[in-house]
Length: 347
Image 1 (cartoon, one colour):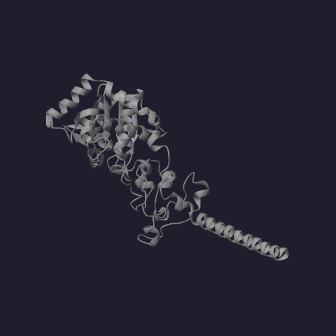
Image 2 (tube, one colour):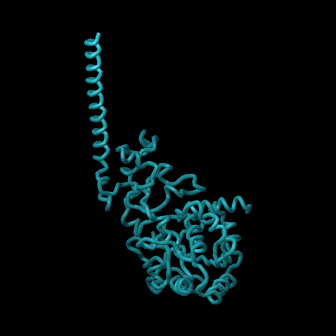
């Protein structure tokens, strides 16, 4: 990596962490001087979507992340070792670096029937998580399944699936929910620790405020259409083609906290709402039970205040605007009339 690309990466991370651009040199210094932290990545009840997101990371790439920034000593999907060799690598980290490594957990942890529904190398996921996460410097739960239980925990939750915090109560856990997570948020979380020697500030659900501090609705590029009462009424209608608000089509952005609109995906190319599909609220707890049906609008959004009546607000604004323009036209007509009469009298 060239020095120029490295500083560009540090500047990008400053933006992701909502820090001033002046912090880029400090981030660069931390990455230059600090020994690469050891990281182990555990996968339990998951679809590997978060690993797929990691493999498609661009700033930095997964190769740069693994070879230059972190020392990834265990990740069953990407590591060369397998079987006993792989498990020994994990055991060695726990044994020799207790309290010094970072654990990443992908996927939910089944608790029912002593955790028999997810076993690796003859051990249950909950046993592995309690040993690895319990001895880690910090644990980052990536994706909604690891954060809250996700889809495996949807009613009736046959395996008793839970998130890491519930399975390992004593662990220091940061949640990065999403289906999948944005790999940039993971990199930013780790770099925040390297720069400040502490984990980022979190909300009541354990999510970093820099990534989950605002609603999707607050930064959505379609927000102006919401305020103007311009909504998509059916898929493929003229309003949909013009990029109008998807709230009536079931978008859960008003009740979902995430930085998707600003951080985006695929090298900041796009994100679901920009591509024409509403947010399904995947970074919220129990979203599959509380946010469905996906294509039905939320009836009562907590804290939505004046925005709560989506049907009426646009009509009110439109009517108010029409009245304002009408009044302006009447006043202008009177002024023109007065000017004309005055001109005649002068003549």
